[in-house]
Image (spheres, rainbow, N blue to C red):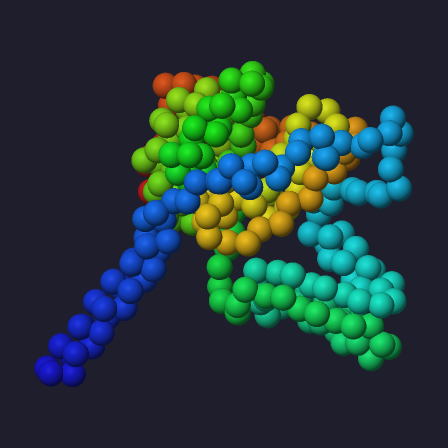
Length: 268
C-alpha cells in the first residue's frame, strides 16, 4: 500500500512537471525590439538587378524525392557538410543518410551534425498566437487584402495542445480578417511556407506558433523567383482541394471534394 502511494505521488509530480514545462516558456512573451526591427530590410530579399541570379531552388513535396536529393548532395560534397535537424529517429531513411555521411567523412569531407535532442517530437503547422502575433497578422491583412492561411483542422492535427489552443482561439484568428482554410486530409500537413505576390517564396522550419516565435531556433529560406513561387502556389492549390474554407462565423464553405463527417461517424 505504501509503495502504491509513493508511486501515485511520483506520477502526480511527473504530470505537474510536464504541465509546468509546457506552460512556463509562454508566461512572458518578449516583444521584438526596435533594434532588431531596424536590422530587417525588405529590399534585401529582392534581386538588385533585373535578371535571374546564379542560385537555383526547387519545391520538393514528395518524401522519396526529398530523400534522394539529400543523399545525392551528400555524395557530391567535397569539403564540408553541416546537417541541422530538430530530431533524429530510427528508420531506413536515417540509415541511408548516416551511411552516406560516414562515407563522406571517410573520403575527407568534414561532417558536422547539429541536433536539438533525441526525442519524439512532431512539429506541425498550427496557429498558436501571442497578442503581438495577432496584432501582426491583423496589420499584414490591412496592407495585403488577399491574405490566406492553410493549416490543419482539429481532426487532421496531431498535436493535442496546439489543437486545443486553436479550438479555443479560432475566432480570434478569424477576427484578423485573413482567409482561413482547414486541411481535412487523413494525415496532418507538415509544410511551413509562405508566398508573397508572385515572386517571393519562403520555406523552412518556422511554425506560426509561440514556440517557434519565442523559444525554438528556426530557419527560413527566402527565394525570389517566379518559377519556384509558382511551384509553391501549385502545392497550395492542391492542399486547398482537401481543405475547407472557414467563414467569419466559424462555419465551413461546402465543397464537392470533402464530406464533413457527423459526430456519429467520427465515433464509429
